[in-house]
Image (cartoon, rainbow over all chains, first blue to last red; front, side, top):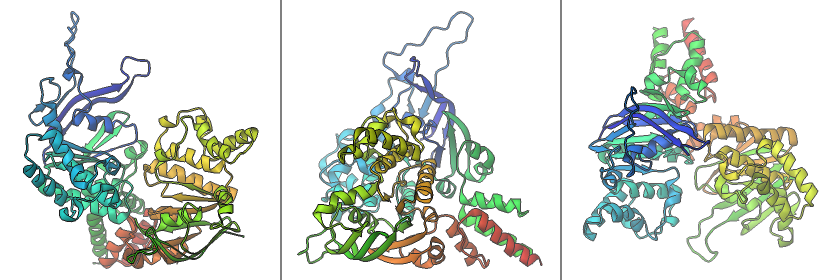
Length: 306
Length: 283
């Protein structure tokens, strides 16, 4: 499913004197199959954007009471924000939002704090109870088993355990299993590696790539960690003060180092070293992944030697 | 004077008669001088948080002895005094907020230990200015950012006038900006106010600010030294599941590719070393 957002705007407490844009005129297309990154500060609008994607925030035109305003004479008809994901038009009140939500899964920040059931099995199966109530118990068991295995846990040994007895990394995996169990086509994760140690981070990113390969066509991560973005994403969008500033592949995005710094955002380590080298007269072209950067530096070094 | 002293300390979360009992902290010897800044590194589950809880008598060691500012923490009569001297800032800012207004939140600690009213006012003022939050005194705690909440949590600890502050992964849930804010406050408290700091973290770059770093693995202290010394032993660090983030990995890749760069910690240093290699080649 392709995500097409056009002129997406949103303000909290609209109409009151506190009204402020959380999202302003955002037009963005995310293709099926991407491993997409969303970057931005706290308050940049990235969460508001993500919440639109599974209709946690509905478009004004999807409101039951919505009636299009009649344009005043001599003025153009008002243009409303639009958001289309695959066959679902999120601006249409007749859209089956429940079905959409089972197709677009969101894993929130620190999802392990949202575990609640008595057993890992019940926790993971909860989504099915809501979205796929027509399934028999046997069918549900198959789906739950597959989801738990997909996140790299051993089904037999964890299914009856209390989620609270698991380690932090395992809890996070259970929480992810609880979202992918409905077989979403798009999986969105808010800061999936936050709070993990370096090894845990590496493991979680490997898990996301394996899910991207075998489970969900599109993966979208929201992250502060520019190294994570440069190492993993096909493209990334940068939000600031509700506006979309860039949508580029990392290899091009991090060439805009000055602009990113002006937005108070960081750049990957590789970009920092590249800049410092440039100041010394050594120009290295790289896509900013560690692998490629090291390769290019070595090639430069060997070129000089030859 | 020694601020914190651990002598052969062991602790297990399991019962003593459990045959498969595992130790979260095992045979730890550690001595922290007053005014010292010590970083404790270790992957998740290495025992570093248990160490923090032992130092402030939230947990009691089953073996060994812990002395804090000259007081034995196992003595029930001293535990109140120990906690006045050792403040802990935890990981999740939302779990440490007790009041809805910033100044009430900071007052909670001193009120509990019976500090007179006027004195509480003075302490709040001092604590807020120490963490750079003076203008937020009347704000709702719920409307603060994560970094600001953590600074309020630190102010709440400061208001008790502790001698030792333990930060137990206090920056792990913050964004890079919030993390920088906290580290600046901690650094200033140590350098200017002489506060003893025990910084528990898995962000290797934060440990750079410390006078000394110790590495924990499976409950034991496995490495000790200045941060530079520790980072130089990167191969050993990797066996404890601790990797140098980004920059260290780059150094390794370049070394593996036959470029003689040493291990460095900042992008600027690495660029410097690469330039040296390149220009040396140039003649």
